[in-house]
Length: 178
Image (cartoon, rainbow, N blue to C red; front, side, top):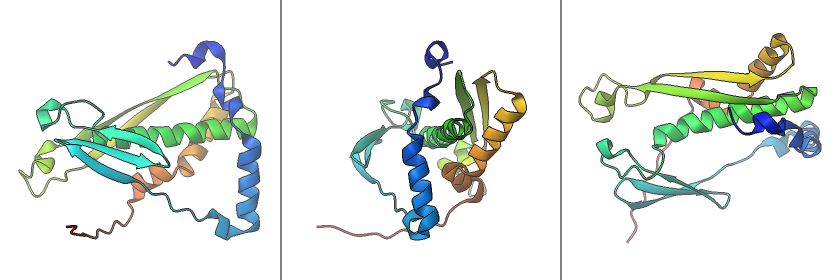
C-alpha cells in the first residue's frame, strides 16, 4: 500500500468546509451545480498526445507493440486511472464526512480488451473494454459494514463509474483548418 500507511489518513486533510459550503450553495441554488469540464488534446507525433485540463497536463502514448514508444500510460489505462481516482476521492470524502479514520487504502484495477476490435479484424467485437474489475484494499479500525457503506456511497455518487456503467452520449464535429 502507499506511504500514507505509516503516516496516517490524508482524508482528514480534505477541506470539508469548502466541500460543505459548496454543497450548501448547490442546495440553495441548483443552477450552481451545473459544471462544464473541458480538456484539449494535442497530437505530439507518433502515438503521443498531450491533454490539458485546468492548466494541468496529461501525456498518453501506446505500448511499443501497438505502434507507440511506451513513453506514457495508454488511454485505456488512463480510463482505469480516472475511474479509480474518482472512486478514491469518493471514499476519502465519505470517510471525512462521517469522521471515519482510514489508515490507508488503495484500489487495484484491471480491464479486459479484445484487440481484434481495436485492430478492426472483427466488426462484431467491440474495441473497448469487455469488463473492468477492481479491488479496494482498506486499512482502518472501522467496522467492515461502515467501510462497505462508504464504498457503496462513493460508487453511487462517482461520475466516472456512472459514465462507464451507463454510457454517455458523445457527439462529434469535424472542423478543417487551413
